Image (cartoon, rainbow, N blue to C red; front, side):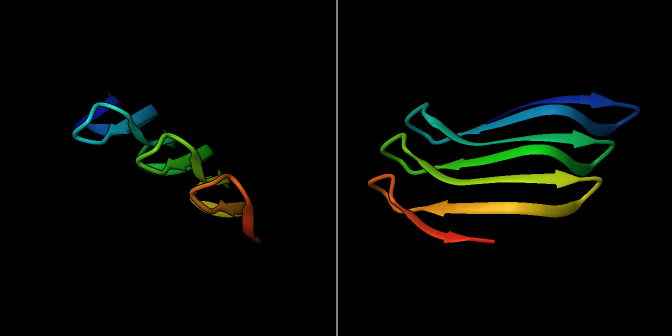
Length: 75
């Protein structure tokens, strides 16, 4: 399931995806279909899996976590 904001037929603003359980799967912010701003992915247990930031579609930083919340990679 997805909850998104559109402008002129393109994804623009916050978008949230959900697992079938109803828990958050991903959250992202778009600027006319380009990732722009914070991006987060979650494990099915609800813990953060990925935390990243984009500027006009370009990845600027990313942190990955294991299912227990421990940082496993930074780039």
